[in-house]
Amino acid sequence: WYDLDHTPANVVLPGVQLSRRYVATPELHGQRVTHPGSAFDGGRSTFLTIYTLCEEPKATFTTMTAVREKLLAADRMFADEKKAVRDGDVYHIGYGVASPELDVTPDEVPFLCHSAVEVIFRRGNDDVGRWYREVFAPQSVAVAGVLGLVSFSSINRPGLDVDILLLEGDPAEATAARRKAVAHHPDAEVVLDGAFLLMEPLHYPWAQAIRDSSLPATVA
Image (cartoon, rainbow, N blue to C red; front, side, top):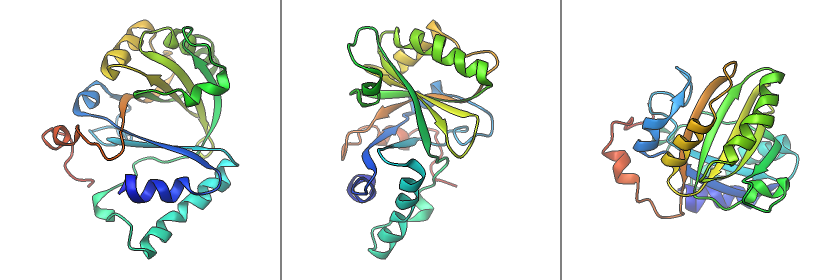
């Protein structure tokens, strides 16, 4: 449904540049660090969708919210009882940092090809945010398997920042190596630190492993 209905209905909208969808396998769930009670805790939030916007974000997002009614009217909406949006927001891009092995500009970093991401949701004061930009980001992209880091700030939840590390190779190994190389700031509240595989459209080789795992079998 995401590949054949939801994604094309959103990407066709003005202001929506591209869509990428990701999945956390049972192995990646096992490696995940979450804040207790968050939307990412307890085996929840297995799937992640990122829309890259190229016009005013809040206005574009408002247009995207109308897609649901459009799909409902066309009988193209996936049943509500079979899916749940655990967390959703609109973010301003802050900065991008590339691996020192790559000759790309900061503006190009969000568009680097990759096979997985490590996603970090965090809160902290201005000093903590500065540390993530000046220390965490450059040390992270120096780790093998980390191609770049893009940082965002929430529009609707002031103080919430998101770092997306673009990975290649085994995401569990790259995430473990990054954690070994540079830990989080002691004053940061980490809501989520976890990896997701980039999904190939219409190809779901990980699906049976999720069905066979101890992850929640329903969205309840």
